[in-house]
Image 1 (cartoon, one colour):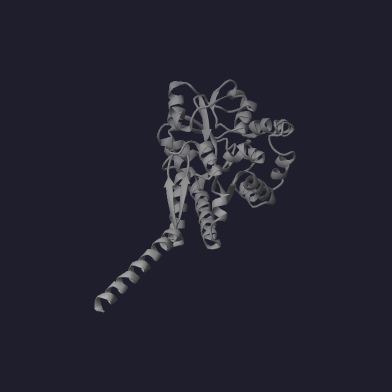
Image 2 (tube, one colour):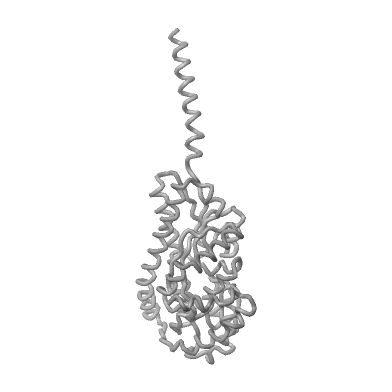
Amino acid sequence: MKSLNIIKTMTLAFLGAALLVPLTATAQEKLLFAEADTVGSLLNRTNIRFAELVEQRAGGAIEINHVQGTQLGNDTQVIEQMIEGTVDIYGDVLGWYAKWEDDFNILNWGFTFDDANHMQKFLESNLFTDIAKRLRRSNNIHILAAAPTEARVLFAKPVVKSPADLRGVKMRVPGIQTYVLLWETLGASPAQVAWAEVFLGLKTGTIEAAEGPPNPAYAQNFHQGANHVMLTNHVQSTMQISMSAKRFDALSPRLQKILTEAAEDAVAWARSEAARGTTEVLDKMRAEGATIHKVNVAPFAAKAEAGVKTMEADGIWSKGLWKKIRALN
């Protein structure tokens, strides 16, 4: 009888343990989080912060596998993987979504936003909400949060004080249609060079200029390849964190709230860090031999504005969108 009781006790213990295993396994959501930016950059640090906030607040209910740098490809490739559902989360700038939603092209058109506050007004407007909803419906992309970060500046071997100084200059621009059209409008000769290869391109003369936010550009040594830095502030950069819409919708409301609030807190931190860090990084560039130039942006802005009608006539973004955004400020 005693041995029978022992067997029954062991059997119950075994069954209890067997029942607990699947419950534990299904309780934790495992999410693949990818990016396509330089390790150590503001965008990368913001993504790290987001992942940490989520895991802290979820209390073990979410495990994030954060694949840093460009291990899963460039931005376009990572976004495609999110659309397909093989990547769950992606964090980078909003402008990359222009390939999938035309109205996001406006983010990459120079001198549309006056400053970070102007960009924030847009991100809080119905204009942005409507564009984000269309992106979600058509491409399985749910934007958790977005915020302005740094304004993009120009790095060049020659000093550039006006659009005339850009004429024929071989310039690296992102592989986004609006960026290419903008710099063609301003007189440059755009070239397609991977972000990680810009420094080498500048040093070897393959390109003569590039542009980007100061912190990521400093991490890639742009200022050492082209030591003239023009504060054109032509595009207001952003930080966004997005998810596969299907993956997000499959989560419980509690976990959706955790992810959304962590993203909001992370991008808000990125905005604050960008404001502080831009001054610091420009000082570092100056100390390392770069010359920082303040420029009169009016001639550049006038030329960019003259191109708006052409952009809208060609359907690059919705007619009237540029004026609506300008009116927000």
